Length: 219
Image 1 (cartoon, rainbow, N blue to C red):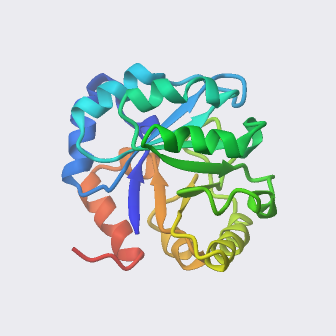
Image 2: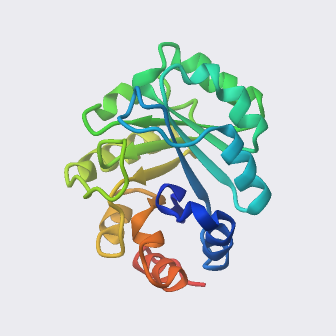
């Protein structure tokens, strides 16, 4: 069970301080949302920011590429210091090849699906992935509300992973907060992306501690 604060909601005027604060608060991953303005209606950051985050934090960098033609940028994000690179099933024409491309660079490979994409679309690649990311909001903006129907999908994907004896992590991104993280964990998730719930709180340490308590993690 891991908490992955998303820097999409961090204060970029003091990003190093923000990163150090969530690390001290015992976050497990740093989640980095990369958006291109085409696949999603927003533009965020590129490899140079990932490189800067790598210098500022010792936590694993969980890089989520919400971009078209991700295969053209994987090398750059790997060189920047990514520990996990996740691509969207909806954007990769040759997803199996893209997964292998990530792994050949010594990086863990993740596959993400949007709310409207059925769990069954993962069947042909689920055994290859190191991480499955379920979007529980429509990607593109932070601060959205969790889509309740995502719980059914999370349960279904957990069964799919168990059926093929996969050790892949099941991550959920979108609208995760202390009041619903327990329910999401019970559905089968084990990595929880939290942006505004963490960076919008007054006390990162208390918020992350509360979230971990809700999913049964004790220090």
